[in-house]
Image (cartoon, rainbow, N blue to C red; front, side, top):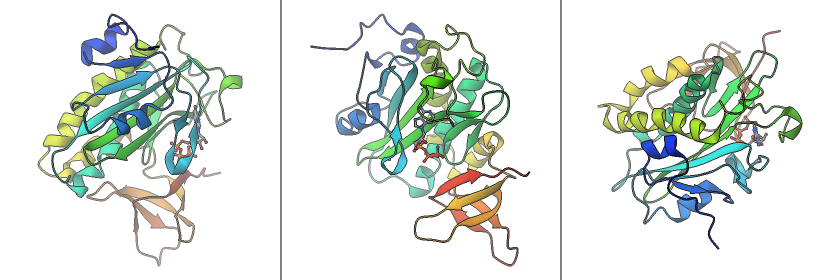
Length: 266
Ligand code: ATP
């Protein structure tokens, strides 16, 4: 049995990624592309609108009702050992691609929450619209993204989630082929830019303008360290989040991993 779609499906997306591997259903696009990374070509794209075992960071679950969300993974191959300084920027660049994509689809208020959630924080249905998960393999980085398209509030897995339709788009405006094409249209040139900028820190100018986290009061739950409350003040040369502690006698801290929560001022 095969669930591979005919090559005339997903025309907008296929115009950007002719070898698109579109599935009627897939357990986890990231798990499958990670498993195939040794043999898959550079910029291989695997996507579905029915992901049945989606994953988030730290073994968290990404869950979506069948047919209501885009799940897409893209392999960015590397030859030899990747530059760790450049590597740190790739999840952020992918998040920028998703923010620009959903904005192009009509969600004006979408912003990136460091490192790579796409949130809408105002309006009648605030929440997380998209989550990204990048995974390193010996052959390249797999960039996974989940984007809620048509789910209604009572269909979403957590009250903190939102979807394109909840942001006011009509179902046809939130169609999976349109959404995937909008993402690939942004991601592919940004990956090329990520590869070619002379210094990885040059990517700061691309990422910071989309980052809703900057200037915000944040809480950072770090593995094995005390909770940090402070103001997110910028990105360092490796894409780490700089947080100025509320206790001003403490030095600014660069966060590489950790759960960042945007705090409200009230
Ligand atoms: P958080 O969203 O709490 O900041 P995170 O960035 O670590 O956490 P991810 O690993 O990207 O999150 O995604 C997993 C989390 O996303 C889950 O723990 C759940 O709270 C949330 N989630 C799961 N499915 C969806 C969905 N379809 N839409 C929005 N959020 C979801």
